[in-house]
Length: 284
Ligand SMILES: Cc1cc2nc3c(=O)[nH]c(=O)nc-3n(C[C@H](O)[C@H](O)[C@H](O)COP(=O)(O)OP(=O)(O)OC[C@H]3O[C@@H](n4cnc5c(N)ncnc54)[C@H](O)[C@@H]3O)c2cc1C
Image (cartoon, rainbow, N blue to C red; front, top):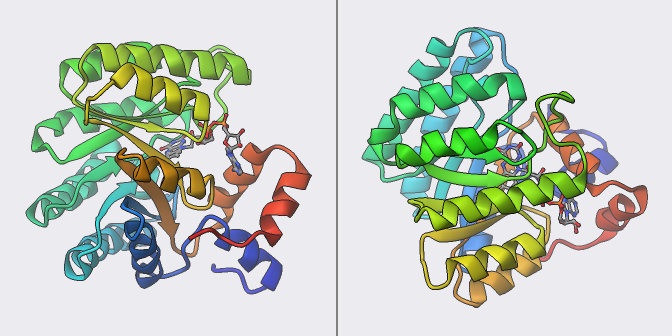
């Protein structure tokens, strides 16, 4: 439910466009004015009831229609567990197919978010089954040890990759747990992707050292792009776009604001930054 108290609403608004599609479209327009393409996500995850899963699928179809109608520059990004992965991978696949086919007819690109480690294999399986559709990409997390192997496979299939550090905590054996090891693996995966002349790569991070490394490794290649989350380092994103880079901003909307906001708060790390951001005016 969209927050009713002022403080919660203010907190959610740091990162989330608002409860409705038109909020996301308006925010997308604001980014478009700075030459930044929107990557719109409808909030929701870990759904185990058919009503919510069907509703999320319909919402993405409506979003695609609205992107087309409003002519904003936007792609979409969705979560597998929002579309039924926790019930059965086949249910997720059916909803995913419905969305990517409609998106293709409307020339809208579709990204798959990556979630908890136990969803990674099913997400990759479904993605690879339909990779030839051509208008889809998948997120890979550098805090997982398996990601190097996953990337080898994905690159062989000419997948389009969005590389992130990872917002979910893996177990001791399956992941990296220090900031230094996650970042070092990020750089390793980035190098691998760029050296293998990768199809399309988004360096989705606010870590300026990683962004600069990507830009240096990529040289003049145009298929390396950058992405930030709405509400984080947006001024930096505008500067990147101004310098001629292709930049995306991930814009969530919808009423299920808590899990997403919690992950962002966890990343900020300390209270003073959260308090500061609460009273800061959004740059866009
Ligand atoms: C476009 C995009 C899509 C994403 N999709 C996914 C996904 O599908 N699955 C997934 O697991 N994760 C996803 N993420 C989140 C990602 O995994 C990280 O959790 C998140 O980006 C923070 O890590 P970082 O790479 O920015 O590096 P960090 O080292 O965490 O941060 C670098 C710097 O950015 C700033 N910063 C970072 N986070 C915040 C914050 N919350 N508030 C204020 N400042 C901050 C700080 O200055 C920090 O020093 C996505 C991120 C982006 C940008």
